Image 1 (cartoon, helix red, strand yellow):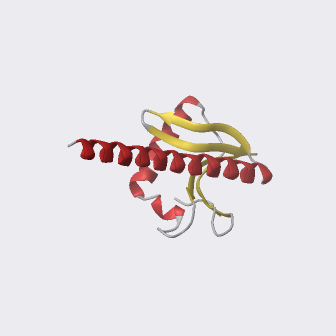
Image 2: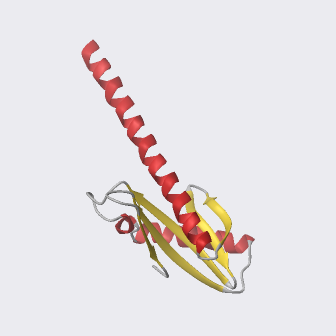
Image 3: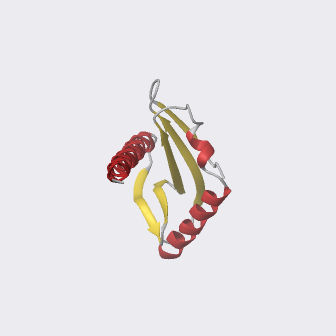
Length: 133
């Protein structure tokens, strides 16, 4: 019984470390994506904009274009490409949060939904899917 408790705690600690590592990868990917968008002339309006439990990673604008950007980061592509994880359910959540944002911040220009995929290994790769959904 004691061995099980010790093993459980060790496994629990490993899971927490893995989650922190995943969050760190995501945060780093968002910073890289934001710098990429700024280099393309976009201005940051919101970062991690939340509506309830749902979130849009970045909201940026450039001239008359408003972009809601979902950032997906992976250490490598061993388990698939980052952009593949933006399924229809995730897209619906982004549309819902975007609608809330637009109620609070009316926008007369064009609106676009992008995905930016950031992969760190074997080398840093940024793939920008404009008008992804």
